[in-house]
Image 1 (cartoon, rainbow, N blue to C red):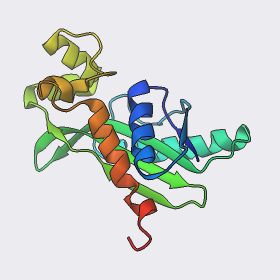
Image 2: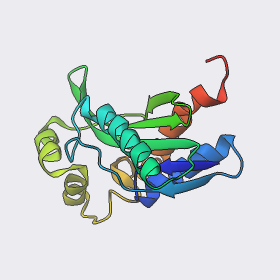
Image 3: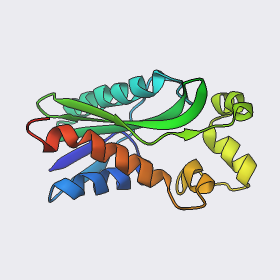
Length: 174
């Protein structure tokens, strides 16, 4: 089975590989960068729109490069306001070769109000690096890794969002 994922970020690729391999055998995940067509730090609905756009652009890429793909996958992370509280979340999307789609979110985690403007302007990684004096927050542990003292990682959250997006594909009656 071939899965084309819209990123070259190893953490996201591994999370996707792990999620698909939980339910399917012989999974090959190929990473390709395609644009999200949203802000660098997606805000509110831009998060889901970025995921949808990446899948659309993946399908175009596969068509142009004559790739036989079983599933297209993408994940976009950003900041959203929910119940007047700011949170970081990821939206994973999966589309199969027949055009069936499913989307899901990761667990969200809170952002202090005083950090929101800086995150929107400079990105979560920059703010986390400043606060936690680390230069690699966006690629390994992620912000959630720092905030949970390593008990949860960015990969965990992304893998979870892919696994829950797969619910549609692993259950005939759901």
